[in-house]
Length: 424
Image (cartoon, rainbow, N blue to C red):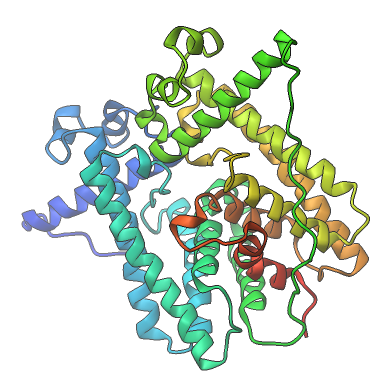
């Protein structure tokens, strides 16, 4: 918490209670973000604060309730900052930039002890229905506030026309991903990185000339493995792929805790015996869902590399292809909201492979800089901003009508394509 703020009076019980509750939520958010809610116990949270478990129960009765309070506190924090931004600034472009940059400042303030740790909204799907509904409703309030900022920018002529709901979703996906990569950079660079990240989005939004034009070609889809019906080994591989795809869908929608292996088996219309012949346990299934998704992305990268085209065109093809997999029967790919459900060793393994994949994606951006199709930009920042948007691109039909996946992908990634483009 902010060490410079005045301490509540020891005679004001209400203020003391609020301060202690805020400290509990901040510390819980820190542990949930790092270890995941599944691996974090109430005993561990209490001990880290110098409390007994009984004292913690005075403020929260269950871990489910604590996760819910952390998520609501995070959303209230973001909405309060939106209020402050709108009071200070009148220009829509400045408001949008300030909201984006604030996410970087929130992370840095928590790391430096100047502000609370804010929970990453990773496991909303794991919450029980009343809690999940309340968090989702508050999230939609924030979504609509940001979308209105973009509408105001278009109306004022500061922003160019765009598919505003898709753009809002992409921006939020991008900023929500910052917690997963900012720890890789020195703290003294965070403010500079925030400005460069905001510049990419600003260039993608502004109503200038030389806008990105979507390509006429279709996405490069990942390789689909067709089996020979009399080859038992290939049939088993196909069955396993079906398990991984179905498991991914359930984990994405219900979270790790909410997903049931029996329900997944029933969805696939297979017996429990047949299902458990291939799948050892839920943690094992989640791990394989991650490796399966990484293999799909790797295949998309390989196919894009074979294209005889510019770096920006290859970046666009990769984004389109992953978007298509996320929103079609080929997918979805696993959302990293469940990564903290894996034990630390497996989590580190998946994150190492993910970092290799992100670096490979960055190589395409770097190639675009070299061939002039992409402006001179910090590749590490660009690849992570786009990766965050990719991670949030699943189920776009819940947010907008989709008639064609290619054009929907162009709408979704449009802000990044224009942000990368050398524009006047």
